[in-house]
Length: 381
Image (cartoon, rainbow, N blue to C red; front, side):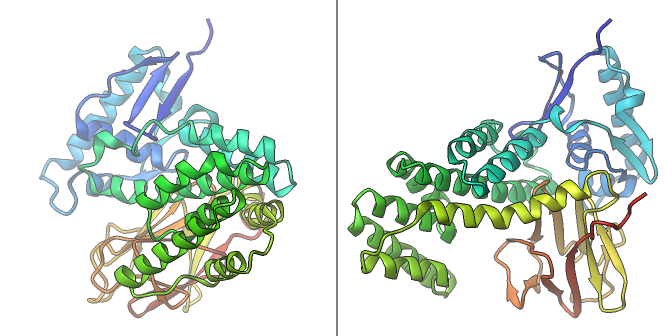
């Protein structure tokens, strides 16, 4: 008898299929338990953390018993569908772990296709890059965990993945422009800049596409729009890269779309190669504090004042749940959880989220950390 094919999806409403058939997943809280385990696939999620995810800071007296009941029900669903729950949803101190291969969930396939696309672009194979990046974006069925939006943990995770999706759109636009098809991405980039008006990389691609299709005036007008939005809403000027692009367009200089796409992709490949080296290890990145302690970053790592955080900071200025760092599979993204005193990366307060780079300094009130990708030889053996 052939083994059943079990698959999961979170790039849209939560879903679980067995041999292509959707399995009803029960109540919202039961689905939320599965979502938290899926978000942290192949890593244990503690019972206290699961309880916080379900009830925030006001769990009922029977929260632990209810959680065990939800897990038991999920195991029954697996068993009734012909899947051995002992190999999939296992007890793993301090809680539970969901074991799934990367190709059995939509986010894993998204990461695989995005990685292949960026690597192809870095080597100048832009046709293949565009195809892989389009396949990555095709994994999205809608807003992340759309059916569980009432749970606070979903918003944080969804924000991080939207960041990944934007970066993939940017990479795909660069590949299409490098293939000489700038006209084909203009409509989508116009829509994306309306949806994400402060993302300068999207505006840079739109300005480039306009310019390369003989629409210089539209390119310059686009710069004026983003310049005004940044000034009026955030009180800042466009970054150096966008200013330099505007100046080149003003001077009617040629733009080397292929070189630009390869340069951008090469930077991303450096991080992706780290993920390849890190596969199978306990943690691919760490936070180091001034006292010499190292905190491993797995799945999503919460930072705050309460004891149910992964990293607890004992300061009255730190919010109860202050920030979270999410490992999306191709990058690490820090989210400010609407804290009172903010999150600073490289001495700049972040607006909701920021993609972390190796060596970045992170400050949360009085506490400072350094973000480091794990060395190739760490955790070996």
